[in-house]
Length: 426
Image (cartoon, rainbow, N blue to C red; front, side):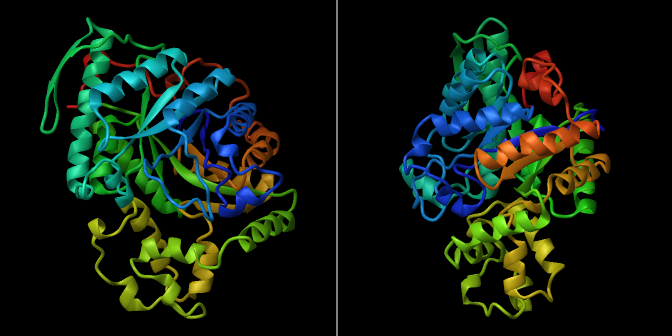
């Protein structure tokens, strides 16, 4: 196990809870300015977190009832690293709807000016709303998207290798043929660290080959231990021991007492339309949960129905993990499932700093995770609570650093140095 946790925060607009935008005196345009983001970044740095993570969907959508960021993640990375000294930023960018040379130079150029504090989260884009933004009738199927991603990453890494050499690059793959000269040079960490979040077979294979870190959905300790062990064993077999760093999502609602935390959660949930969580559950079970009786279990024929991954707009890994979780609760009612489903894509803890710190320690020491991708109920408040009340408890347990001892994101997460020609994905 690593000496210290890798801790990132998934900075989801106003917060992980859908109604977080209703707290306090928040202006409707706060997500389009800089103050909200900088305040959250400073809170992350106060808690000695390693990185801020930004998801991205390059498609417009209805912001009700859960407004998200409308700003491009790489632009946010430049803003936040300029306003802080240590914390890194992991920006999502699609391998399906970008040009590999342009993105390679944009990412590396940003990494240079941030002093080596940038990470790239490789996403293959499953949202059907995105394709129309690019004049395409539909997204490629899942298998094709991952073949594109493997070739795309190989092309990007070829450009990054050229930046470390004489600037000249050439790559000929299944989908991309590129040749030219890049004016960009290597950053303080060589090039951005690579993260990946796909939990399907092709996603795990890509992660084992190239990722320095992986965002996962884990709901139970035994499965989390097995997943981390298998993923790192696959990477070790490819000559990448100790990688990728596995950081499951962890949703948190923090209170000074259990009652206070539960009251905060219940208040936020009461502000959300009744069918919001049911809509999220529908994506997992492949059936409109809003048509089901709330006080009866989910029908067996729905739980056991074959699932076509290309027919549903959701992550395969996310869906499979939650499907297993729901299968274990076959006797639970829809109402009970929805209540416990409150992490919306992550395990959720509603409780005191002590309870949260104990749980994080238990998973870390059991080998279930190298760290966590934190999802706080509201920003910056929830993150400030974590920095001031949970982080010190983790330090006292000896599993969280007491100061930033490194200058680059690569060193912070223990990803190891860039290894010459090993930049090529192969």
